[in-house]
Amino acid sequence: MLDRRYSKEIIPSLDGSQTILMGWVHEIRDLGGIIFILLRDREGIIQVTAPSKKTSKELFKKLRKLKKEYVIEVQGTVKKSPKAPRGVEIIPSNVKVLAESQQPLPLDPTGKVKAELDTRLDSRFLDLRRPEISAIFKIKSKMLHFVRVFLEKEGFIEINTPKLVASATEGGTELFPITYFEREAFLGQSPQLYKQMMMASGLDKVYEIAPIFRAEEHDTPRHLNEVISIDIEAAFMNHEDVMKILEKLIVKVIKDVKRHCKDELEILGRELETPKLPFERLEYEEVVEIVNSSGVHLKHGEDLSRAAEKALGETMPGYYFIKSWPTNIKPFYVMPKEDDPNKSYAFDLMYRDLEVSSGAMRVHEHDLLVERIKRQGLNPISFKSYLSAFKYGMPPHAGWGLGAERFTMALLDIKNIRETVLFPRDRRRLTP
Ligand code: AMO
Image (cartoon, rainbow, N blue to C red; front, side, top):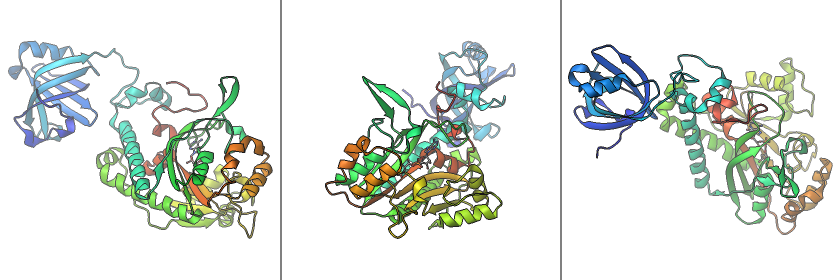
């Protein structure tokens, strides 16, 4: 039994050897005396060349019947061929049809016939047959892998927390209610409360990579209703300690992706630059000044509007932090500054005009936390089990959440977040 090879593994030095390939018929050219088939698999495209003189009649007839996107198994001989793409081709000795494909296709997997994003997402499995689309997901997969490797090396322990939850974390309006037997429950907006409770467990440094759900009404190129959040929480650390971990992680992952995803980056035409450490740290007050001096109005104490983000993005290249946010526009768990409680130890990590992460040093003192919950118009009773973790020895702690899709957008300079999710969930889209 011959080994199955990917197209990429077929190199001119294998000239003369027998091999098996499996994949899709990307294109067929029948020139009468010779048939060319472009066979596409996960790793690329290879030319299968069948000259009538060197091909049995039966096989030649079979090849004639192939249609675009049929799934085939090709057995044949590798031939060095300077004229073929990549300098190598396969002379087939046997071809099996493993699956037929209906014609016409709802989407052209070669990408020659352009399609709108909505049409592409409706037939996402066909869209993914295009190398420039699958490259995004190969890189996203590697990115998440390198994030894990980095965090493990830094001593973080992976945790899994419930996504069916009883209360809000990031403010009450962005929740998806669900029916949980005879009660109402919600889809988790963030592992925030659980990762903080882990700080009272002694696990010390934890991380989770999991979906979060936000019932945000926005229909923007930067928001989805379900995304993957990379969350960390670390005890005995302050905001600056976890900011250092975050910037180190970004730089390390960029270096790793650059090294291990060369082909995919080339397909996407993306040249990754490794940012310099440390990232610039802007105080919220400086941001207000920069935005206002660019002609966009931003009132002190307000969150950044889209116009403000854009104005900031034009001034600030690459990655930078915004810190010392006003306390009352950040969630209740964010620690106010001791000397000026209107300011907090919250920070955001930006990439140009895009927020990729936010985090903070947290309130770890029980009574202050109750007060902060009330101040935000929430009821401490709904947070009973969370609050109890703060009564019996809760160390000071800090953490952040990094949006996997926003980070992928920044990595690959992608303008629409939907491009970074296999099956995006937005205001209109629930299938496929
Ligand atoms: P926040 O709500 O800022 O903070 O979310 C953290 C990061 O998750 C990503 N993100 C989103 N991406 C796309 N669409 C959305 N609707 C969306 N919502 C969030 C962003 C964002 O920066 N508990 C805190 C984190 C912490 O303090 O540890 C939190 O969830 O990249």
